Image (cartoon, rainbow, N blue to C red; front, side):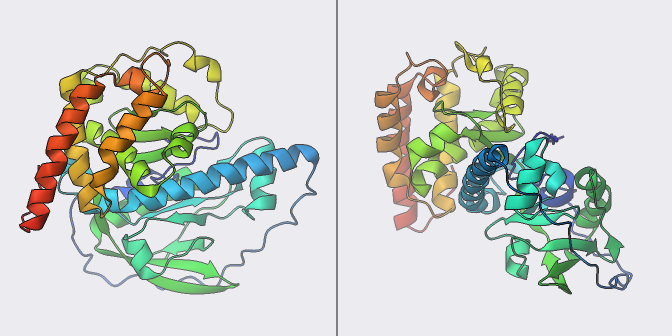
Length: 365
């Protein structure tokens, strides 16, 4: 089961719970009975935000930066997760395709910052919408307040995220379409949100400046430093797809590093991670070249199927290895040192993809 926490995690699989919004059972059975009537309009007014102090201003800036990075990751990840559901095999699930938060998604001064800066209150609000998902097609927007699902009122307050999972999970698993009642602009609306099949991996931003990415079998995390290094959406897609591929191929379990890497992800997704955990190698062993190359091959097909340009992949990975070689501990190349071997596989894969695209063959490895 994917993990959630109360320490400011910003995840692409919704913080409500992976089983509730981005994953559920694989069946597409419609409920025969009619949905319950929609609830009456629910007020979304919150208490007056507290005055912004110097401490809160710093928290506001940090929180705003993390949210902006997470939004970008979510946007880039959308086509990768949705367009590659068949390649993700048993890791594909039903999803609605949005994240939701309230002020209690954060702790300490970040609670006040979330209220003052993001205007979060007790009710869950849509934080981001996965591009190409049922939620996006239904017109769900960032800032919409979640009121009810198929007539069932959604919880509010400190435990809203986890409590909402109990409501949304069965609804997503048993229906092709979910009727969401939302509050927008002070009035309630109903949206019919189709369930979407997609790869059910959490995609997180890592709150650190080392140039790295991690996958533990269920989650993918890219550090702030890697996003800043990658710069373009295509390059971010290369990194995301590579670790999605590692998860699909079960490499964390094969190398027996799921626990170690999972601990790093748990730490770095918090708003105040313990960066001392990154000293040295952080216990991460180099990925064997055969496994790394297999992930490169699969990931490039995922990149192409998502509509990103595979042509720049070789130059990106070569630039990364040149600027941050294996001697830079806790850098990507230190964990993936077989650069020349990987580049050879990348060349062959890109050539095969070009050939299949020109002859209009299915993009399947």
